[in-house]
Length: 417
Ligand code: HSE
Image (cartoon, rainbow, N blue to C red; front, side, top):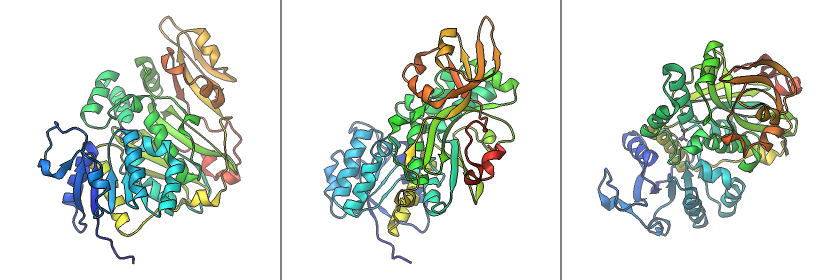
């Protein structure tokens, strides 16, 4: 076994996750790491520990040679990028939970680790307490992974749960998610699906070895959900969840997107409620697996940060095995999806270029249509969608794209989740 390195931590950020980590570290038996200094932005903010622990100058930590691990838990992705890259250039190992920053600079951050021979761990950045990245790295390195989908945003899952179970209005449920510390400091990242997309891009790097530019991936959130959509789902015995998806379309190609999705009661994700996240993998040999755990909140996220800190003390590094295998080389948006579209104007509906229509309804107050669209077309509409009076839900129908079943594994044809 590798000798454990004594860790002297420089912590950046003391918000929900920073304080959560502090609690988790203080209560963890058997693992001791010193937090040497904590760097925060706002000198006027009241803190729950004495001010002598804090600094407002990042170089007090970055230039301290006794600090051998930087833990970055701030909100601002630009400042986080500067801290993380400066730390790596000084030969310091880094743990981060900043999904926006990691997804936006993924390939460069992977290269910097190699160049400066440092470790960069970020389990908390996707699925918070669920150890999905390490599982993909260690457990799925030789698997033919057909697809991965799930719930990766705790705030939207909390909002959708409250709207479904208690008929609580969207704005009230969002305020609760903010109050409980689940939402981003800019909650549009949650409700418009950005946060889920960044997490999906990070997971894709480990699941398939492609470091996607997040701008290439279609995402659509829950901002425009209405009581009609909830009513429709409830009448059919379904729930609506925000479900990111990444999957193979052939041996070397993947597709991915973030869309709300109908979930029926026999599916794993149906009972993943409130701030919980759930991830389902479908693979040729392991078949389907389901991971579930708290996806937001200080202690849940702090637990994943602690696990990275501990792994760091043993010298653990991600090896990016799928990237090095280089099997998946292409990305496509040419992919059929069956959607429910709630709309007001026929002109809006026309923009979606429906190919097959299986159900439609019109009334004085609302209309909907269920049919097949191409992801390419949704992507073309991406900028106008948030301001249109429509709402889109993936129905989850599975048999639209002729994905090769022997490659895809049995699960692909059985309609799990
Ligand atoms: N705002 C995020 C969420 C926090 O709601 O999932 C955890 O990444």
